[in-house]
Length: 127
Image 1 (cartoon, one colour):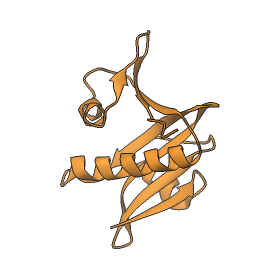
Image 2: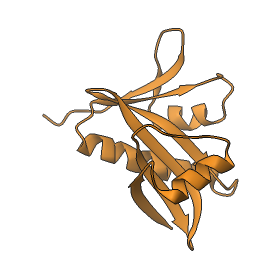
Image 3: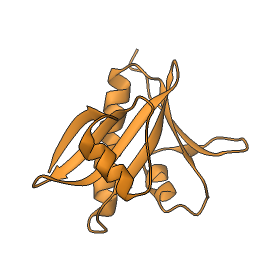
């Protein structure tokens, strides 16, 4: 499998998001997970504010190795966010019953108090 870093204009990303009924038109950093030329997963983030990125998509096309694929995509996206000097990353959900919440919690994301269902991960500074 190969991870490709691209943006929201990539036709593979647009087609993959469409298959999940999602349309993205804001600037995004996009990761596509390709397997033998076929997109099997994608994730993306956008700037939330100066120090904070927001994960806006995480789509997986397979139930096989779903958790492993999600971890791989999220970890790589976090590395890119750190390279862009973001201090933390957030992800929001429509329901506390979303199956992906458990994956994010295993990756050290924590609920933020407020009206939204929002999970956040602070990046540790090496300075």
